[in-house]
Image (cartoon, rainbow, N blue to C red; front, side, top):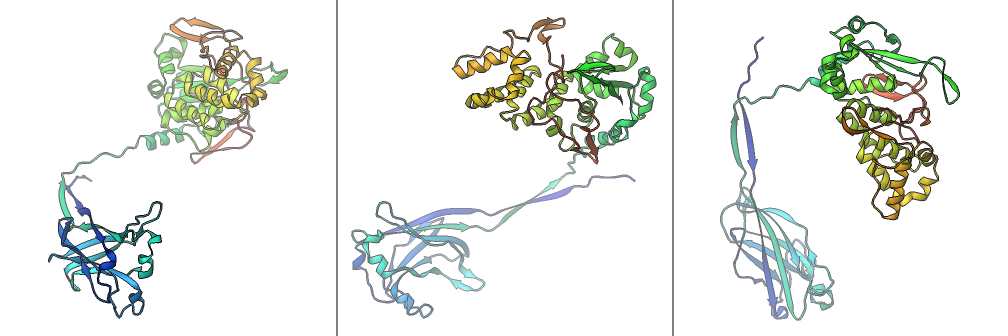
Length: 464
């Protein structure tokens, strides 16, 4: 079925509002006619493009509406001296002339003046503006040296004015990239089905066939080593294979783009082996690579791991999301570990916020286990920065110093490359075992076991 874009119309209605005021100063208030129904009128004045007059009844109006109450009050009215119909919002203020005393401000009211549908209305006011005794008492500040000041603030509303414009079919196509890539992700067998995707040893083109949807390369993510030891305990190798699309990875990761465009074995075979990142963390990074989104709660559970992974693979958007989340959840127990993390992941904002957090809490932080880990695992440079900060001296910077942070030039350029890195076991971070795995369903993520989000020392460090 053919579709067309027909012109549409857009209407804008504006109501002009004109603000102004009238002020009436009366010297010799006690000399005004004080009998009931006797009015003193101001001269005709102009405000908001129209002519007005105020009427003051010091002895009240004697109106049957408020009798006998109105006899004990000063009455005040606004008279409209025009003919056209007006909608006006106004309020009275009896100015207090005594220092530190409050003005008497009446509630605003909106009325129609002129030849209205309900008849002719040329005046509107308040028959019980203020009690006569209160007005006469100079202690109240409204009558000072026989002088009274009355102010009227008003807004005159014009007729609504509308303009209609024709939209000649301007149209933007719907943005469906995230929706479409989520559908692709849902159909990849490794997403949300970790048991079905063991590590593959096949050549990339063959292994990628299991992925369907034109997948053309495989990333084997393996952690641990069979028969190896970590902290005196046996560690079993565990891993997963991810059949993916080379074009998508090259577009989203400078690291993988460089790998696949080089004459290295990975580019020829289509198989990449990753041994520094946990499979569950790598899966979430791939979710970001494909869709620019993460499951609910993922950053809270594995934000530190994802920060290191995104730094290695050059996923700047994911790195920023993780860095900001970690900055917002600093505590005395985790700030030292995150200071190290900020240094090793080149997360300047996290490092700066960690230093700022430590400064007023130095004694507490230095007594924490996280701080002892920083010292034990070669953080002399960072320790010197903290001490310089507390002493008010310029920080040493991340490029100098010793204590385990041995920097050597990179073969590809002048960027310093840290040689000494703490492993996940040294950092006190257990790998994501089946008991710690995220349950990802319907786009959400829930921590089944204890996560490594905001806890102390929860970092993964990777050689980059």
